[in-house]
Amino acid sequence: MANKHKVRREKVIACLLNGDFNSLVELAGRETAVSSILLQLTYSLDDLLSWRAVEGLGYLAHAHPEKVKIIIGRLLWLLNEDSGSFGWGAPAVLGEIGRRNFSLVADIVEVLFGYLEEEFSRSPMLWGLGRLGEKHPEVVQPGIPQIMKYVLDADPQVRAHAAWCLGAIGALAAVASLAQLSDDPEPVKLYENGELRQTTVGAIARQALAPL
Image (cartoon, rainbow, N blue to C red; front, top):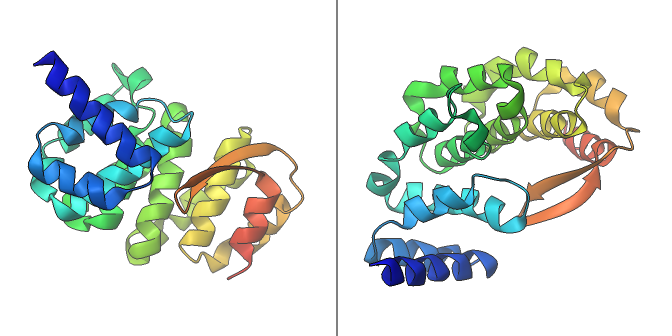
């Protein structure tokens, strides 16, 4: 049994390293526990593999919603105050799931915004809300005033994800706030278009401003 799980995990990782989400979806259709393996890979968002696991769960939410629905409770548990130290990727996952299959998070949107109040979940939740808002702007746009508060956060990664989120959801009201960040030189990382790239807060702010 342990060997089977190891082989399955290696298959999942191979799909992620290759950016082959179609094969990942096919694997999840044939084998069990793929969603659980992906979730385990998101506990830390330090590398490309972890971020692709986040996106992979979004693909599964669209193709195999029944396999992802059962882990929603687990994601919320990871974000409670008793287990928060293990839930770094959970906010991003919830946003990505909502992007691909909104019905799975429709009842907890208000809860998602609540995670912005917690320091450990703020940055990944801003990214998750941006991903959700790109496809469902009407859901995230009412929270623009709350999101704008974090443009001036002390943490550069929070500032970056706040700026990126505001651009993703077309927040015209945030133009002045984003302009304040356009020269911010702090280095940050951003997962976008399947890649984790090194950039700066200012570059992300300018990118967010471009379509507004």
